[in-house]
Image 1: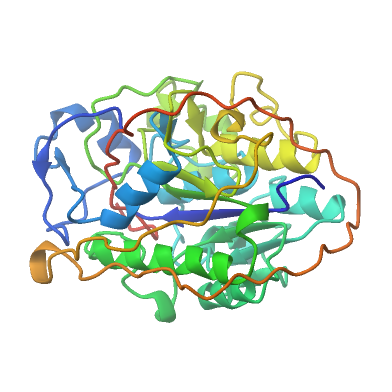
Image 2: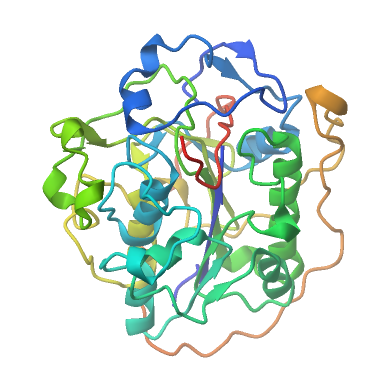
Length: 388
């Protein structure tokens, strides 16, 4: 199967450097991040804020040790649900959140092709750990591969992850940890670190590619204007009530930049990627890694990158994160306490599992000279969809 056998995509809620005022932690409000607010975003001076290293020290440490994507864009110029669908299907028939986005049901599901179904057709596995948007995909909504958020750490620590995992801080066991306003983002960072630590404990670090990203722009300022890849056409809607004819001809893809950290044994170390990436890039990475053919026009688009520049598959795997000695984030309104430290438990070294179906080995990418210092990531505050 190649050097990378597992892909883990952490989707939080919530680079090219730009200094802004320090954001309160937790934030004071949940900004409007519907499409119409995105179109008027440059006039919103209230949310021109950013978090600093003292708020999210582990994210800064991971960015320095591994790869930080400086031009990674959310897919849709709108809120959570269409962006979540793009991470699963490279497709979304909506530009804003659907009417029943809190509790999807069978009548709300869309007919979409998906990466999980393509993995199954290849004899490979997948896991959705807590993501609500899988219930909006008709071919996935009733799958036993839909699991709860806490199950991920258990599966990872046991060395039994599926081929591709989507992981979300959702449900009662992860309440307040998705970094969605009005949550404390330091707490969310600590949760993410604990999940990465479970991968290390299970002996999967060297064979796993980990992506930590955020679903949408969240109503927060970014000075980089995203490229316009696609305009909204009401005919793309599968539900007439979600056609939004008033948005016809306005940008559908891409949305604003969001952070993306690339971790794992073969992730480049101390590297800042300047290539243009988006949520569909993660779908294409899985396709390239596991020999899966594109399943729609978007993931088949040759202009969309597949994250290859973020990895050095020709070298030896690097070590797990070193987060020892990080300063404690301030307690109370300004911060969330001390970051979780990865376990020092020796890693397991299980034997290789038999491959069910031969998959294409990922292409080797020559290493580039590491950047001296990554740009500081600004963690937006996004998460489970709200009515905004």
